[in-house]
Image (cartoon, rainbow over all chains, first blue to last red; front, side, top):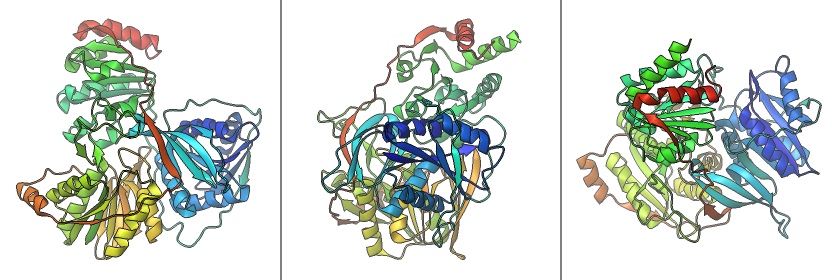
Length: 330
Length: 253
């Protein structure tokens, strides 16, 4: 199968979510198939970005990648993917299930009229119908991963996005960088009318989505002031502060810090759940943390069934003592 | 300003999901129903827009007859008209859902803005709003956390977060906007609102189900590694053990 994969990148190179998507795309393509990349950039893809990106794609088994020079205009991106997909005769188009990935693939689905399956993490080729329509058995997340759906996706071109926290990236090194090929998309009038303006690069601080450590607080933190010690601990560990939905609903902290189904989904090495009971909507946002520590007065809270370590106690007592102990070490 | 806001009835799941024995749906015997938090915010945003600019909010849903409850909940918050696209047992896929919404919206006409939640809580398809926009030939912005509408120039400014930075989209009306929780803090229903909700008329139609290429086979619970947390201690006595854990995972050297 020939698979077209949308690659997202930033100044540090290819995004982790795209690497994970590449792993599923390779599985989908099969041993006889091919994964071809497509990368969008505001300007020409040149040094210093081109070399590390081409190298990272080569390590994912991608031998060629189209580059399209466009600002973030979702319809124009989708139109480009439609054109490249048609030129390649691609059997499938895949993207990571990021905000942009889901958005662009939905536009592609709307433009082409094909169905699109979001947040998949496994797939298996089904039987091609007598009409020649391909069929794919996909396993996808519902309820942000609290529920799994096995679904049938049937179309002449299969469109799917790959869950950002459920596929482990597995490299498959070609031993050479991908060849980057400039593609000039045949846009239609109005395709670039809706375009991100004032879009800035991520600046300063550790972003929640990519933080290696997340110190998260729930209602058990007790008050808006109670978050000072979480901020201090996060900064000592080089991490970011997260919160539960209860906390944003109370107006204690901004929604941009919310972890969970309707907030940010995080994939840190360490997740510290402080005064968070662990509703499934919250766990959906932090279930792929490598290590989870829960601090809670209730030893029977649902969070205890997901945490690796627990401290039974009040956040306001434990965290200041922990911060002091860490400071005393240096 | 005429705003149509689309919502979806979903079960109120809390601690643990239980499936029906056939694996086709969530067992809702013991559950209440609601709409996604994104959609609660879409209703609130719609109501604020007509409070500021005049006009009316129509709330529309595709779902079982019981979804009337979610329409009435929206009326209690300030919507004034209800449209139910009544479905039977079969789950509508994203394309079929968008087609049914488009047919209903076309029939009504005269709207300035169509609001959706960014994604439904249950299926998480991330596409119905976008598909509706394409079918109607309208501009669309998704995942919006701040919306300003200027009825004079008939333009909207829609802002969202992208990887920690802000993105702004400008759209001419009529437009489709999908919103995310955080755009506002939804109000609670008022007593007059609840009374209005009881009396509200619901316009009902029954779209025909069709296979749209994405079809559910079965649901299952994820294989979650159920851990039994190792208790490091009580209160601040646990701090030395906590420090050791942080050391063991390489966060403290």
